[in-house]
Image 1 (tube, rainbow, N blue to C red):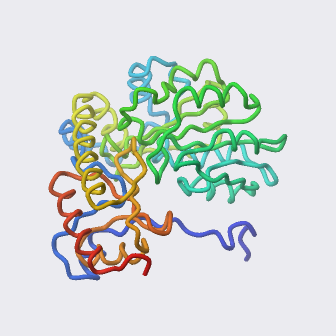
Image 2: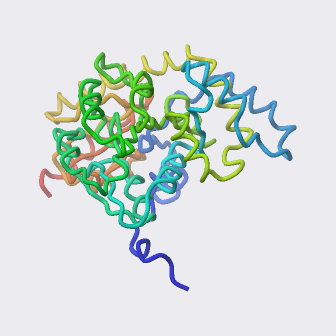
Amino acid sequence: MQPKPQIVDLPVYEPGRTVEQVKQEFGVDNIVKLASNENPFGCSPTVKEALINEFEHTAVYPDGASVELTKALSAHYGIDPGQIIFGAGSDEVLLMTARAFLQPGDETIMAETTFPQYKHNSTIEGANIIEVPLQDGKHDLEAMLAKVTASTKIVWICNPNNPTGTYNTETEVVQFMDRISKDVLVVLDEAYLEYAVATDYPDSLSLLEQYPNLLLLRTFSKIYGLASLRIGYGLGSKSLIHSINQVREPFNTTRYAQAAALAALQDQAFIDRCRELNRVGMDYLTSCFEQLGFSYFPSQGNFIMVDVKRPGQAMFQSLLRRGVIVRAGHLPTYLRVTIGSREQNEAFIEALKEALAEIEVGV
């Protein structure tokens, strides 16, 4: 038996190292994990009670249409319930979108350094991948627009961008949407939307009525702290959401995920507090980087990408030996670091200084 030819050499997504893996490999007891952009403050206390209440329903299938959660999210955003679709994380909505719209030979455009699942799922569908370099760490929308042809089906924009944390402004996004063909689907991935504090960050929800070819991806995995439960969603026109729904697997989100998301959505005070704490942590890390003479991409997410002026993989391994897990590999001398709690951030900086003393510049 032979698989699809386009997946033969397709790399498998590699998640960040787990705490258990690092403990076992390096014999370190106290681990600081700043690799997966998880919320270090967990989730709303109301979620625990919601999950406990679901235990007695473990043997019962979930609501395949996520009716109660859809109703709540519809009210939260002030949009029609038919404009919402849920997935096992927003990455499943991404997968469904590629499945619904891409055919072999279609073209799809994305940034060269961005969330890898755009390329992964588009490749599986046999699409031709067009990658555009970032400009100063953010999406070069002008260059992406110039790549659009009659064969273009989807353009992927990660905003804020993972891994750089940079963002495109509302003016930039609107100008892009005004000029691109209405036959091209634009996917605006906003997994880190709730962390953004820039005043010119796009009010993308207000753009949905004007642009029926716009799909927003959002998630409960990041600031809401429900990463392990895998629940995210897409927002778009009713016809667009209907098309994606046609390829959705039945019961694709669990009872636990739906209950947790519903409870989390109702505690916006927790979200506001997490946003504030994230900015405090961001300010601390950027101050430390500046003292060390390091440049970094200004970030609107809950992570930051810093140039440590040394081989990223070597620094990654050196930090692992000290019990600190970050990410490397996106750019040669850069590390991507999740903003942690105060204690985690301080532990990272201490380990970073030790690793810098161990590894020479340019080695």
